[in-house]
Image (cartoon, rainbow, N blue to C red; front, side, top):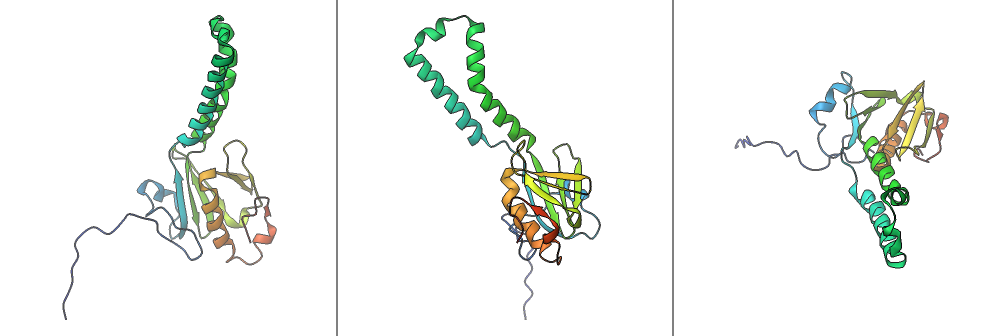
Length: 192
């Protein structure tokens, strides 16, 4: 008989499945999110949107640049106007980029699905907890993209980047509560 001792750090990289039926979480829960869990609460899934998706911003900016190149090619006299005359049309072409950038900025947050609640933590550290039995409506969020879960005078916004895994984790937790899914107005079709 031989004792094997491994004093190295545990493998922290890579996705982890925290509960049966839940999608993989990106890894262990970061320390800054743990205070938002209640004592003894079981975490089923967590995800975080920290960064602005530059692909969407780049696509809208690229479309504006292509439109301005087209204006330059077919109407070069456009650029001979005064700066105040140019500002309004150029601003109108760049406004979708500003909207996409703003939408990405306000969508940043962390989402945790536990055995009894869904917890959303804003970048400022403020959190909102919506108990699973209190969820009454799941609808699309047109401001931030993704979904809004409403119930019991509370609502939580789920960013589009986290909507699919949050829905799967939520469905895995709701399945264990008999009859709970039937009482929710699920406009996005998240629950079975």
